[in-house]
Length: 287
Image 1 (cartoon, rainbow, N blue to C red):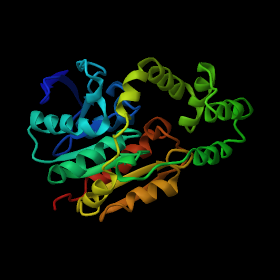
Image 2: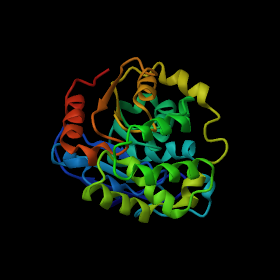
Image 3: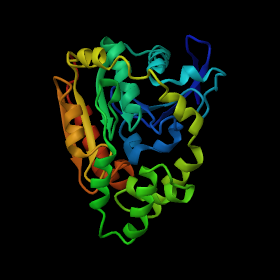
Image 4: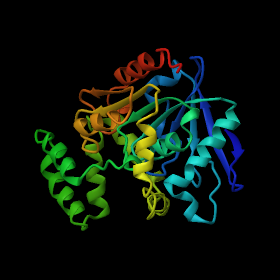
């Protein structure tokens, strides 16, 4: 574990894992506000590329400031910039998963000259004014009708939509985050449940977080760097066509659907996930 201080004095932690490549891939966890440990080695990606895994403020080994207002997603862009300085890079290859898509896009909109490439994995894009309505999650649920757990999960999903879900319901809904509900998926889901911090997640999405969406979108439309958007065939947030819309924000955006995967593609199909990213990063990413 390594640490650095951000402008408001909070000490944040990051972890370097693996080796390979001419520069590290900086990975920002989703959740929102999940500790970076849930990435593991990203399906074996660390065997071929050095990863820098950031623990966001208040998560993992990073300090928790008293002022939860500093957790708001747009305000944490400064933390990524401080990480860039700490690791001594002029530009970053950035990966963001799920809710971290919002944070990575906020950073790219604020510090576009510091971005070398982006990898957005099943990522949100509310920073740029793109949201994924709950109805699309229902579409993804219907793709799982042949699963043995479908009849149990479907009513839990409807209770969640109506705001009446219990903790047991949300545990059932974990199945939708994975293409296969096998031992690896169950272990990953259990770790995520243990580490999830509802207070931090609420602060991340506090009112005002996405007020600058139009301005951010305009900057991203001029961001002339390689951008890879990965979606899962079975994911409901985003559905693949919504992920393609996110890729379309960028002059050099491309979209790839991972077959059989849902919201955690490095768990569902690690070999395919790793090869997709290695192939992307191997390209010339100079401007």
